[in-house]
Every structure is written in structure tokens, then in C-alpha cells.
Length: 326
Image (cartoon, rainbow, N blue to C red; front, side, top):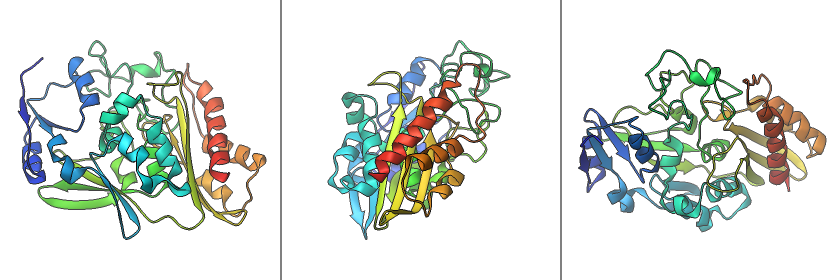
């Protein structure tokens, strides 16, 4: 492994200054980074470890009704915090609880889950010359083994985004805060992901040296409830093959507002506003769920080995809707 400088900052300002240096990577728990370094995909000259800043950057608090989640909050802390013990945030709590294994959840951070690199086996292997990795002329998965790859929204690269926290956070209207050059910015979470996910672009839109500090979930309206469902090949320590997060706002027995966000089927987490719009003003029913599931996958183009994602994905949408409406 190439030698590198390891920075243990004592303040966020110190971390931000170090993060701006060339060939520097910022890490939280570093679970994804270790894998990439082992495979020689990344050989940074400097790594900035944010974990010494847990006091400042971890934890969950309610501020004026809004939920603030520190970037270094672990998935276990997120799952178990009493602020998430309500119907409106059930989808986020469940997505955190279902990630990987207990050992991983005790270490993995919220920001790390959102910013992790794609799990495509072509780009994550140094042996392959993949377009997304900047080492080859084409997306190898397009004509190779693409059983876990995109069916929606891909352009010149069929990777899928691996975060299972992103869909429920997007469904809840979350925002995120960052710091760069001492300046704090707060934006919609949807801005964290490229609008056109081309191969030459990263999984996120952060500038070099920009550090995510917190996630913010706005006050949810009365009658809000959410859910998260995913399919996977193994019950534990596996990534989703399809996923769906749903937020419904009920007024009596009628759906007053809705959000539907797909995961694991596109290079970025994929909101489906046209499908969600059909829910508004309707009463929950199996027929409605089926219609919305079809619309959620409208325009899907399966690859040579992943047509199953359409069948399974629609079933996951229906299950997420059913859970949210209970």
C-alpha cells in the first residue's frame, strides 16, 4: 500500500483545512475506503479522519421540531434514537436497522452511507478498465454481468447507487449541511446527487474539501407516515437489488400528499413524482398500489441480466405502500 499522511484533527476548521490539500480523502468510519484502498482503486497521499470530531459531528437533536442528524451518527444510533419512534419516520428507522450487520451498523455513519462508492464489481476491481473508474473507454457492465445494475435513469454508465438511507431521507424532504473554506451551506438532499449521472461524475456533487456536517429532516405534517422496503439475495450483509421508500400524509382515510423514491435501480436515488401524484386524493387499495407500482417503473429499460428487477421492484413498491398505509 502506498504510504500516506494520516490526519487526526481536533476541530472541524482543522479538518476542513487539511481536506483541501490535493490527493486527500476525508473519512468517517472508513468501511468503504478500506475496500477501495485494498483494491488499489484509490491511493491517496493524505487521509483526514473525522472520528475525533464525534462530539461536534455526531448525535441526534430536535431543534424547533426539526430533526438534526450529525454526519458521524452511526446507523445503530439512528435506528435506536427515540426521536425516530413515530410513524412519520418509520421508513428511515427501518432502513438504518436493515443495513448490513450489527457490527457494520455500530461503525458505519449516516454521511458514509450517503456518500459510499458504487458496488459495481467492474469499477471496484483494479483488473477491469471501466469507464466510471476513469480507466477504460466504456461501461463494462452494459454488455457484461449486469444482474445488479440499473434499469432506470442511466446514461453512459449503469451503476446503481448503494445508499439505503437516501430514499427515505429524500421522501421525507431532508436537507444537508456542509462546510467548505469555513462557509456553511445548507441544501436540499436531492442536490447531493448529480442530476445527470454520467460516468465521469462521482456519486455525489461535493467539491474537493467539502465536508458534510449534518442532515436535517423538516417537521412532518400531521397524518404523515413512511415506510422502506427492499429486496436482496441474502437476509443479512447484502446490498439491495431493489428498494422503495414511501411517505404518505393521510387525512382521514384519504391520501392528502405522497412521495415515492426508488433505490438500487438507478445511478442515483430516484424520486418518482408522477407515481406519487396518482396517490393524492385517493383511498388506499390494492388496485391503487398496482397502478402506482407500474408508474414507478415507467420507462424502465432492463439490461441483459436484470429484467427481474422490474417484477421484484414493483412488488417492493406495493409492499412499501401497504406498510405506509397501515
